Amino acid sequence: GSTSAFVEYGRSFGKLNLLAGLRYEYVDFKYYDQGKLVEEQSRTFKKLFPSVVLNIPVGKVQMQLSYAIDVERPSYSALRSNITYADRYTYETGNPFLVPSYTNNFILNASYKWISLMAGYQHIEDAIIGVNRAYSEENPSVTLLTRDNMPSYDVAGYVVFILVFILSAIVFKLGFARELPLLKNIIIYTFLFFGCLMLTFFAFFLPMIEGL
Image (cartoon, rainbow, N blue to C red; front, side):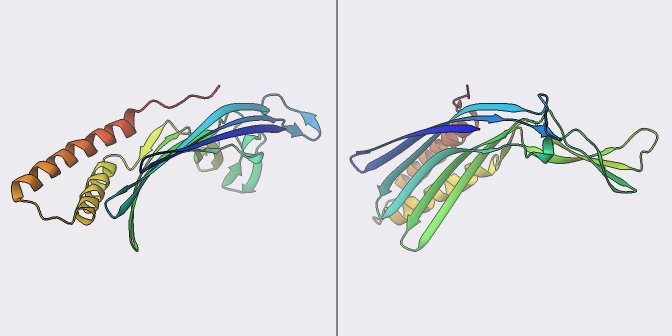
């Protein structure tokens, strides 16, 4: 069985609009094999899922920054421990020790008329992937297909910094129609550079709310 609760809060601070949410999920997953409860594959999941959306106009450009967590839980078949025959070179099994995978999503979006630009960053914890292993030392040519959890990793990496900087520069150019002297432009783009560098740093190292 499963139980969930959700609370949402929205407020405007001048031109800045804030929408924050918090979802709690409790999942009691029972695994049965031929009608018999198998404790090893049964799971209980408890976790908080925060989300935040910030909207603010910058000149004629609408900016949005959002954060949310996605979850991927192991399927029923992925938790099985029995081995099944696929063909003479392949066998399949599950992994009773799989844990859920969580993805922390950061998205920066800028919209100007019909133009929309987006930069994203993901921190993925315990991704569930397919793994090929030798069925046994005696039969290395026979493959055993199973599932496993990967160590945590980041998607986009330093590409995020480049995208955010380019996006910020475009937003500045579109949203600020007044022509500035070269020296002032250099100063502004220098601040943009270091500001985007800080945003990328926080995206990598900002602490997340951990589950219960």
